[in-house]
Length: 96
Image (cartoon, rainbow, N blue to C red; front, side):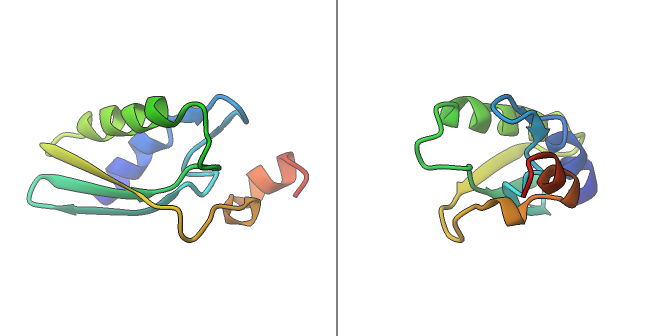
């Protein structure tokens, strides 16, 4: 079930950089139990102008997974996101 949730989260592309939020390293953890998904994540900055929009996309994506009846997003700021958390593909594309 967790992998299905990650697959849905990979469909969410951060429009500012053009990569999905999983490859960017913004998803820290996915937990699933008894029809409830808990997504621990961050954003690239606290002042992200798409903050509410991205959180809505995350909830919508998770709720599309069969068997998920509830989605809780735990938005955290520690550890603070940095480009080193991204996949190698993203780091290379962004020159990191």
